[in-house]
Image (cartoon, rainbow, N blue to C red; front, side, top):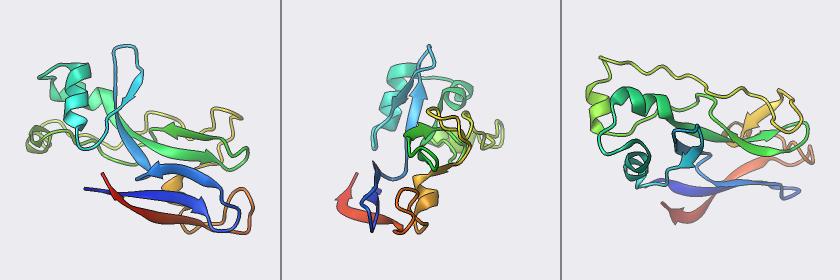
Length: 147
């Protein structure tokens, strides 16, 4: 089970989204992304795509949203930047050679608020200078909880 972390500046206290830095999702028929919480990811996918969706459908309609922040306006948002590969079932591993899944971003690395391209994921910011105060460092702090 993964550790749940907090991400924050050690100087000004800027806080980013708690968790692992990303979240698995499935898209419904209208393109709305629905969070799939661990450890029940497969259940959430089956609720949206049906009990036995094809591997192709799983790959088209699932992904990982990274927790992001704009370095210009400090807007926090989620985006699928292709940072992680989707894994949903043992069948996907077995069939990997038949239908390879390239890491491919579904979203642009751009702030939806101010359109800036100066965007980082919270995992990229760990150990880096805080974008808000420019003095502190973003730390990854284990909460003591696991999911």
